[in-house]
Length: 429
Ligand code: PMP
Image 1 (cartoon, protein in one colour):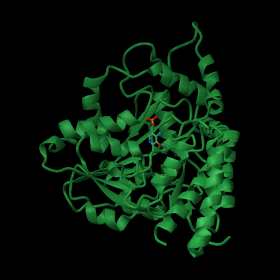
Image 2: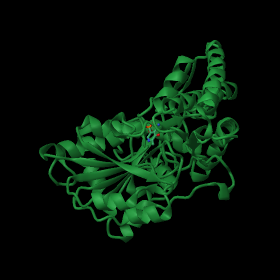
Image 3: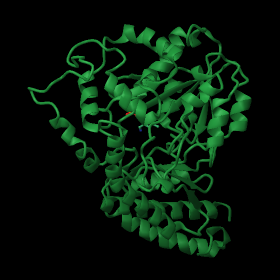
Image 4: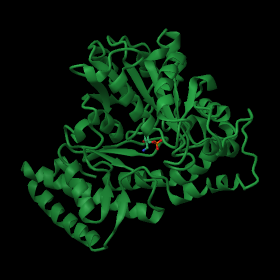
């Protein structure tokens, strides 16, 4: 394979002609496929359907502590659900509050509460001239959406292979206006990498100037391995206890849900945090809601039983996800390997592959794919303010399409990368 950068103008023009023909041909196929979001495939959702058989009209609806899940009460969630999600995150049930069906609005509420009422007695953010957040990027678009919604200034922190650039993070937290950092520490969205032990240690030992600074630790993919073998799985230290060892247990709010374990947007969600933080959260919770859906919580507890149950279930997910990731990675390697026009991650878990084009090509690739019937995640969405400074990053979400569709998507994607790269190189000839 000759890298494209070594081709002369004539060769590039000829290549462009060939690729354009292939592209027009692909366009003619009338594809209509969506790779934009990390949605579980129907076959994955089917695996949780037996959960629906748990309750008949005669079912015992009391939990192990005798709580009637059909009635009001138990604001913190039933004990079994706190234990189940606690086990998943490696923390005691006492440190967990179980919420409703999804974690994003728990995160939204955390920001909202801090904005209107302040964090544990400190000045509400709405009364401050400036509030800033650190946003490791590429990152999760909906995190950035929340902070943007509240007018919080977002500071992009570059990601390294080990996690956020901690030199920068340590520097920025000296500013008292910096109130938080968004983190997806395991199989991160969209890079698929897991923060290293060293990054976690430095994170747990931050010395922020702001007393109300919090690490927003969104552990959405903590059990989402693609491979069953231990040595092919990433490992993440448990952060609540790591912060506690440093006397900083109030510095972290951890979030998770079963959206990509049971049903997306219809699972159970939680916060794991110190007692002080949970007391603060409960203060506004008691105003917001009388109790969450405990029937759904009980359904999850009876279905999964314990962490082992979740792990076994996730192996079935992996059996569906793994071939999809491998298929995309194979196509990328076969079509683009050695051409010097793109790099991509090879995650061991999670929902995404992150692709970087040559500088200034991502938007063009997105548009070409779109014109040929394949929708990708909007380019730029993985950065604060939807602005990718170098126009390179594209998030690939292989989970939803069937294998057949995915092959078509991946091949078209590779073709569009080639064409956009040739066009870019020709601009400078
Ligand atoms: N966090 C991350 C990092 C995610 O990727 C997603 C789903 N795309 C969520 C949170 C949303 O989770 P939930 O459905 O629990 O709101």
